[in-house]
Amino acid sequence: MKAVPPNTRFAFRSCGAAAPTARGHRERSSATALAIGFVVTVVVQFGIGQAVRSAPEAFSDPLYHDKRERLRAHSAGAPAGAGRPFALLFLGSSRTYDAVNAGAAAAALTHDLGRPVAAFDFATSGAGPVTLALHLRRLLADGVAPDAVVIEVHPAFLASQVWPPFETCWLRPIRLRPGETSLARDLGFPTDAPGAHGPRGLFLAGYEYRTHLLERYCPELSPLPYRLTSGPETDRHGFVRVPNLLPRQRERLRAWTREQYAPCWTGYIPGGCALAALRDALGTCRAIGVRTALLVTPESAEFRGWYAEPGRARIVPLLNELAREFEAPFVDAREWLPDDLIADGHHLTGTGADVFTERLVRDALAPWLRAQEGANHER
Image 1 (cartoon, rainbow, N blue to C red):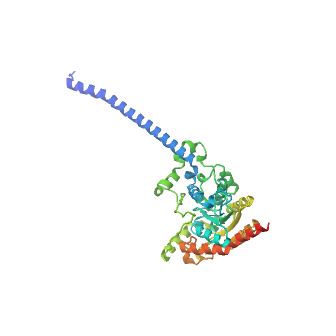
Image 2: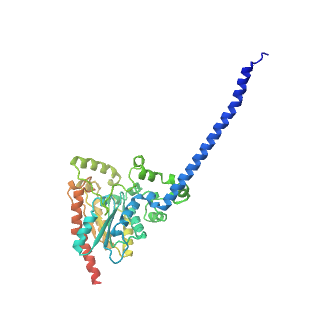
Image 3: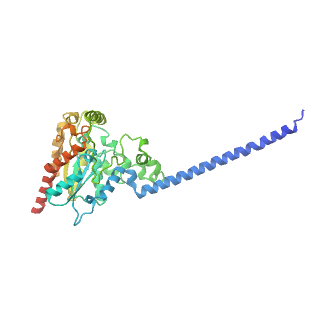
């Protein structure tokens, strides 16, 4: 056999000895990286979990949380007692937060009633009747004590022929507090307890709240079609002023609105869980002696025509019947404004909000509250 040159044997020995050493080094590096990744993941999840537990609704329902914090800084959110102004709260969707200038309403009512009035627009995007019923109960549980509440009714959210209800686009299970799931189901609203209410909310908070974290801190990456964070910045009374728009801008917005609410128009039948939720909100207020009124904000002629008959003709009789049941006034303001003061068919421009708020106070709120004051004095 031919002898292997010494330098070749050295090369073979070197290669054979080096291979296991390199492989072992790579394995140790991979194990270290995995361990570090695991520890970092646990620390991040634990940190997010701690943050969530310290302010749960800042992550689970930022729409409610952000508005409540603003209300707490407002005199309408102060505890009831001597020296606090008469507290008037508006509950509703985005139709209310850009229609009711609560600061102007409070000033006008203070002058008209001859006593201090504090008004706050506690409206949030996509808030249908079920959301309003839950938010009302939360506010009361959180120590808010209004003297009177105006509850907006968005007729599109009354569309009982849509299943699941249109409101599910916004009111997702993770937004509910523990214990609210059963109440929502009692109202006929389909929802399940989110995983965040169990151990996953404790150990996998970053995963459970991933969408809301993106919404709050990196909204351009959010996969949701409708925002769940605070949305437009409001004034200190909760009002959002929409700029006046050109005709072509209003036309584009109306086309988008019609598409957005398309499921609600065909075969329109008002009722369902939305009606049950309105009844729950009115009953909650009546049980604690809070005055209530129902309000439908202005809609353009085109928007009103999108509701299919015969359901469209049933809206006013249905709400009048509900108002009589709870002895609450019903304000049907759908035809109060010309179309050029309505941005997209149902959201008001800033000028529209000024005109609407003035008339709302003059024709509805002031007479209602004066009558209530007179009834209280007679007692």
